[in-house]
Amino acid sequence: METSSDCEAMDPDALQAAERFFDAAPPLSGESDVIAQLKAFVYKQNRSEKGRPIVCVTSGGTTVPLERRCVRFIDNFSAGNRGAASTEFFLKSGYAVIFLSRTGSVQPFCRDLPERPLLDCLETAPDGSLHARPQYEQTVLSALKAHSTVVADGTLLHLHFTTLFEYLQMLGLVGSLLEGFGKRAFFYLAAAVSDFYVPWETMHEHKIQSAGGPLAMELCNVPKMIPLLRRRWAPEAFVVSFKLETDMGMLMQKAKGALLKNGVHAVVANELHTRKDKVVIIEAAGETVLTRDSRDEDIEEKIVGHLTQRHRLYLKHGNGRERAS
Ligand code: 9Z3
Image 1: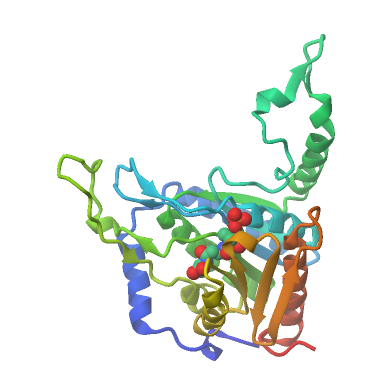
Image 2 (image 1 turned 180 degrees about the vertical axis):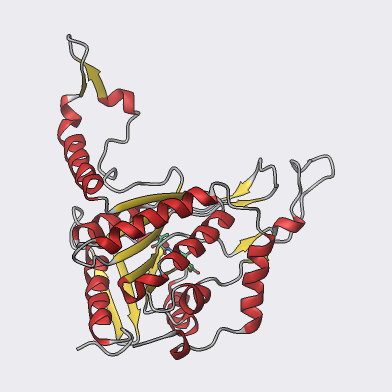
């Protein structure tokens, strides 16, 4: 069995940087409510007879505020498609899912809904009852059915973040609360997390004024948190991170570096413009290229299929970083 001591020890400077980040971050609003929701969810899954595995899927982009009373922020491209689609496939595979997603990003079972304002999709009948317009009925009905099943089973918990601070604070809470799940816990880190930020202690309180001329601002590096998850928060959990680049020449080398440096069980490497068609899963066992064969297919089905199989091996035999047969 792998424990934190089997992993490379965490660099003390990196650990201190992470601690400083959390000490200086603004308090997480609604923290006690998040903890209560997580505890209730974890308790429920722990009582499930089948000993259901649990995955935390992170999804969507983090914002980086430029002012404490935030008027402006830096954002990124991520829509949250990958996290939402993957969540659906994890649920189908028998996992309970903590879906930690950016407020307003794509949500599970909503991906096929019409991209039209809600009120355009609905109509009232002569008796005053509400209906989906006929052209949308089938899609709305099947989304609703899938969603209701999950609600009835109690296997999906939604948590939302907007800023980088909120994301990392919530990931820390989930990590610590899932520690008791041991190897049954799985982290699937698909959120697009900023590498740069303005530390809270140096951030302007009020809206930055333009009267002083052009704005020059230094952004600091966000401390690396995956090693903390791997080595402190939930050392036995199965952890998969994603590596995104736009320069194909760098992608594989950076993804392989992340596997070694962070001690994760797999890194999913993807390039921005081809991310829906092709990914490479890097593991100690080697590389697996997954491609989408048709427009109707979601590549996430293959990613989740591959990784849940690896998680099963990890549960059965040990550290999950060995060469799979
Ligand atoms: C990913 O690479 C995801 O696959 C995407 C999914 C964000 C590309 P969409 O949300 O896109 O479906 O539009 N996520 C991880 C990106 C990231 O921030 N990785 C960090 C890095 O590359 C490591 S944690 O350094």
